Amino acid sequence: MSRAFSLAGLLRLRHLQQDQAAGDLAVANARLRAAATRIDETRAALEHLPINATGADTLYAIAAARASSRSMLAELAALDTVAQQSVTDAQREFEARKSAAVSLEKLEGRHGDLAAAEDLHAEQTIIDEIASTGWHRRLGDERAGTGSPGPGGAPTREKR
Image (cartoon, rainbow, N blue to C red):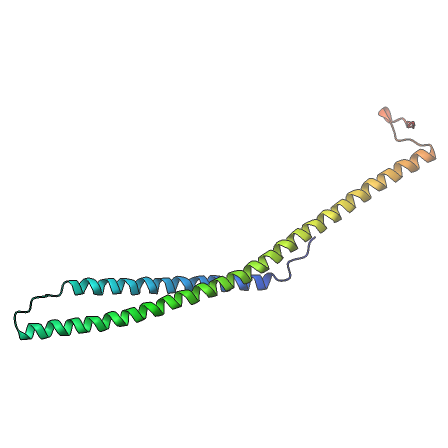
């Protein structure tokens, strides 16, 4: 029987780390999409601000709303930049974890191929031994003058 892959535990760990990195990447992508959505919503809200001032109070309110919206857009842009960097870092981490797992998977594949070859070699050795034993037994029977029984149970002599 072939032996187990000695690095199977490490391979499972690498797969778990790869899955965790994939989850982190998904979270980072969700945050990036959420930041982009907030930016779009804020811009859409800015389009609905009144542009005609009917008095000084309205003019001050419009100016305050625009200033507030600009600072909010600047904060959202900074948040978007951080989210993009987070996605880049998560992607890099995922690729590193995946390459670590792939190298172990290749080792596991080579180990499987080697184990299969060893199993086939052992099986062929057993088959050869059985065939050789039978051949030697028949050769010994011929030299002793006893042939293998023919039809009807009578011994026969094989001719060369």
